[in-house]
Length: 368
Picture 1 (cartoon, helix red, strand yellow):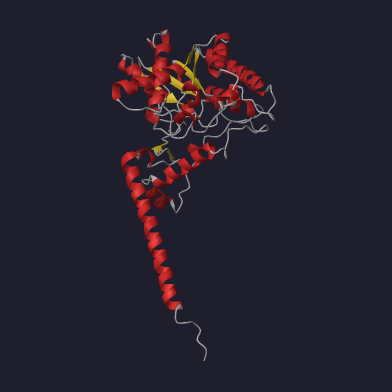
Picture 2 (cartoon, rainbow, N blue to C red):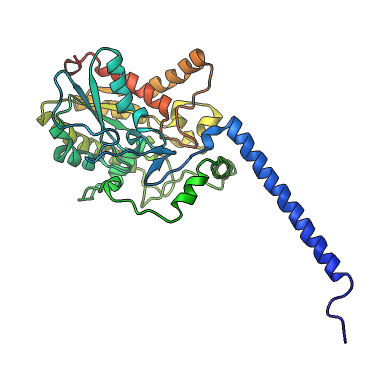
């Protein structure tokens, strides 16, 4: 009877299994060491969850009327200054807690200066100016805000242009019931880990650094922070930026009139992208070629606001000064934006915006 295995087969198999086990042990040890290191030196990578319930690991906390933050009664209390913050994801506060958004921090600044203030953060990711206006007229105007403020980032300009023909308003997804997944509990256990987030973010950085990812706009879907900056691209119509700003101005005038009809004045604040506010290498991790940008979006928005008679502040300088002040007073580097993000401000960035707005509106009649 012939032997099925030669004399060395089983020893070779044992050796192979042993080598695989050793290699897996080394990989596991490396992962454990990396996780331990990140937990100590980069804890910001932990709990980096973005879903229906969390943004950057922070509870989204949308109240029953649809604002991010506490429920506010329709009727104001005597002496109450009510702030209505409007905008898209940058005002909504992607990546940060509800109480750290600029509407909330602006209310805090008023409190510190002796004014009883409450806030309504009515923003939602992906909003356009038409949607902001519709939701204001149908809902938030009845809350009788004293200060009505629109925060504009470059994404709001591009989204307003791209969805200019939309007739319906985006439903607030956070008012819909959440379907609980059977894997939700398991997912929550992994939220404390920093390694997955660190690997994902740094892999993206490498793709941009190596030129395997870029910031080019799709001609048929021109969305992103660079359209409003006059991004030059061979297959992009050369006048698309101008048309986008014209559409934005038209829709902004409609929103102004809606607010004016309630006896209020709309104020506007510009939120700059990180790669335009700062020059550091870490401030342009997506390698945006700024030489291809032809327009100062903050200046253009200021000109439009002036032509429409709207109070306006460009928070670019405020964000820059905020970083410098934190370095001087607290001895730490303040990114002012959330991780690997060119648009969304972090807690410190929102605070700088709130202080800029207080400088603009703190002495108005409505704020007294």
